[in-house]
Length: 113
Length: 115
Image (cartoon, each protein chain N blue to C red):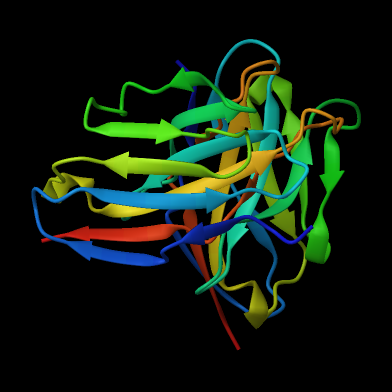
């Protein structure tokens, strides 16, 4: 069965610091990869996604993620965080042709002004 | 897109009662999904529909849970004889098979508290 690991459960950063959130998945075949974000009081929103092609994916609000197949990883990055990036971030994976999304446990990011 | 909507947003019930939640997907989306999220966890898949057909159910979906999508539009999730362990956020998502790189879009969820 697929699983997704997000090793950082809580991250605290100051504004303008760089961010990298880890995501590893366990499945040996082709996968689709997603990062969702949940801002306080809001619903889950898609941040970015990878299906195929260029392993460096750019999303909204300056976020990007890199798919490294050999490491089964899809880490999320942002060069300079803002206070408004305070949120919970979820990595998710599904197998092409299968609809179930498997989520990690999430990372709570707090950005202090 | 007007977004996925869910009703109610909050539900408090007593153990043993039945509850029903509704989800309205994005209008042109033919797939609809239900997930459950408990504190400190990511969403967990429960079931999904393509049009009115329920195509997959998780083992998490016990006999007390039933989902329907009778006309291929909105869906309902009913929990019978609720237990305290059913307390969670119930999320609905939808997607379109017509879109390349099919992506699930989530609603605001229904938070259930079973006393």
